[in-house]
Image (cartoon, rainbow, N blue to C red; front, side, top):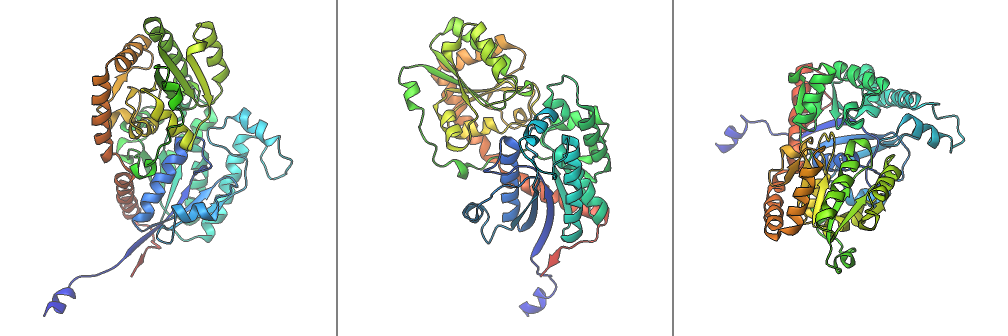
Length: 425
């Protein structure tokens, strides 16, 4: 009679298709957004969520790379749109890049390019079948809005950073702010990468708190199984190494790192400060380093990624993230996996998920310097931070984040009463 009992149950395999808009993806990424998109989409694919990822620029994602990351069991497909859009680009930077190319397809301004991307997204949405739209950050928000208008499918916006984060609280680009605000008002749901970001959305954009779902970013240790020891020679002289890694922009607080370095070196001259990254404040930071008389203790390494960045994490005795406004911050997690304890800004989303870390206000360079001195001088402190934080981040992974996203997709689809393309077998 067992088969009669089985007949009372429905057995099915559940597939959901997500039309996802972003603008960078490894290995063609220049910041944390691409890393986050990679981790999230891979975890979603494992859960049988089929992702149609639309890139805003033409990049060569090789077959071997795709096979490694997204084999037959990983249901991620890419559509590429030819454009000069780059992550973290400014209006002036866009014009410089556009002028290098002779073509009629590019817009005259960054905003024109964003709108052109939206028009192409509209055509894609007409042809593809999907259940929900997921758009990452402001450059892709208009594309998400266009896709919703033509398809009627629910739209979720993923806020990795607000305009107020990118400017370090020093005003806001009105055009960018308008896109963010109007898109969030139009969207059916919003994902924020932290409670820190959720509060900014409520405060600066007037979005109801119950429209926002917090999904912290994650990290997968399996991606960091073999970290090279390329910078071992730097430690042979017995110096302690303190690392800053990130875009050298007002948002990331590089000037506070340099000023704290000056205070540290006044007490302990046996410390080397590494600055890994690039950005519009890079020259300014080099000049300030020289004016403070600490150039021989500060090494600017340029933009690093992959093994080179991981080697820098591994070589360091302490990683410092002095961000003025950091929606999340994946770099401290990468540092912890490499075996290096971290000192992070209290003005960051990652501080919500890491307990075993040194924390400081970005502006308090005296406190920052004291904590750097403590970490490099006291081995027991470093070892305690290293061991406890390594255990702690095992729970901060993309599987957890993707599970929350799937639940949110289902909620939004249900709330909207959308006609579903979901297949049941």
